[in-house]
Length: 245
Length: 222
Image 1 (tube, chains in turn blue, orange):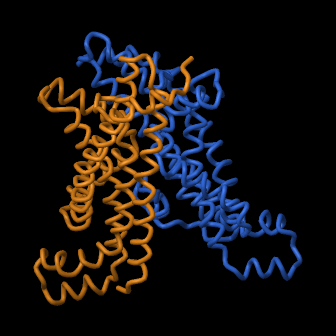
Image 2: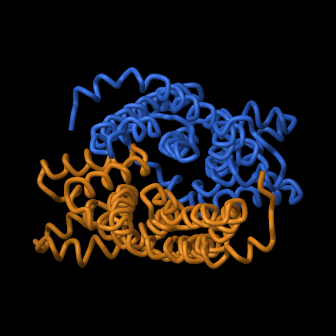
Image 3: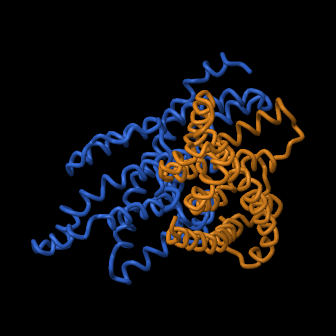
C-alpha cells in the first residue's frame, strides 16, 4: 500500500466529489418534490387521486433501486423511447423517484399526525383547503418530517455511489479507476479514503438537518431543545417501519 | 440501438431466474447474519463494558453512514489480496450485506429495548436475577414483539439491495443480464425489466405480510 500515492492523487478526486454532491443534492431536491406530490396525493380523500399515487409509491418501493437505476439508464430509452443525453440525468431521476416514493410515506404520516382539532378550527374559520394546507397543516407537519427525511437523505447519499456502476464518474468510480491501475493492489487505500469522504458528507447532512429541525420547531413554538442523541443517529422508526415494501 | 424482443424475453428468462435464486440465497444468509448480529450488537450496546459500547456504536455508525457498494468493494479487495483469495464473492458479499444491515436492525432492537418500562429492569434487579435470566426471561420476550416488524422491514429492504453485489461478480440478475448480453449482443433491456418485475412480485406480498404482522403485534397488549 502506498499512502503517498493516495495523497498525490487527491486533486483527481475534486471533480468526482462534485459529481457525487451534485447527484445527491439534485436527486434529494427532486425526491422532496416527488415526496410532497405523492404524499399529498395519498393523503387525499378522493379515490381517483389516491389510487394512482399509491400505485406509483408501491411500484418504486417494491423493486430494487439498483435495478431501477439500470432500467432507467439502459432499458427505458429502448422501451419508452425516452433518451437522456447523460447517464447522470437518468441516475438522478431514478434515485429521486425511488427515494421520493419512500419519503412520500413520511409526508403522508406527518400530515395525518396533525391533531384533528386543528382541521376543525380551519373549518370553523372558513379556510379554503389551500389555506388550511399552507397555513395550518404543513407548518406543523414539516418539523415532524425532518428526522425521517434526514435518514432518507443519508440513504440517498449512500445510493449515489451506485451511479458509478452506470459509468458516471463519481468518487466511487474514481477510486476504482485510480486504484485499479496495476492489478488493483493499490485499491484498498483509495476505497478507505472515499469511505471517509462519504462519512463526512453524511455527517454534514445530519448536522444541517438538525439545524433545520430546530429552526422549524421554533417556527411553530415547539421547544427547540431536542433530546440529546448519539452522534449521527439511526433512521427513525419511520424509516424502518415505513420503509415497508 | 436495441429493440424490445419477445423471443429474447423467453430465452433470457431462465438466466434471470437463476440470478433471482442467487438473490434469494444471499438474502437468506445475509438475513440470518443481520437478524442475529443486530441482536447481539443491541445487547452489547446496552449491557457491555463501556469500551465495548463505544467500539460497537462507533463501528456501526460508520457502517450505517457509508455506501454498501464501497464497503463491498473494500472487503472484497481486502480478502482477495490479503486474507484468502479462495473466498467466494457470494460468501464475502453476503457477509458484508449482513453486517451492513445489522447496523440497521440493531437500532430497531435498541428501540425495542428502550421501550420496555424501567420497572421491568428494576424488578429484575430486585429479584437479583442473573444477567442471562434478565435478558432471556424478561427483556428479550418483550422486546422481540416490539422489534419484529421493524426488523422484518429491514430484511425486505436488504433483499432489494442484493443486486449491489454484482459489482464483485455475484451472479445475480443484473450480472446474468449482462452476461447474456455479452454472449448474444442483446438482452439487457429485457433482462433488467424481468429483474424489476421479479422484485416487485417477490417483495410486495412479503411487505404486505410484514405490515399485517406489524398490525397484529401492535394490537396484542404487552
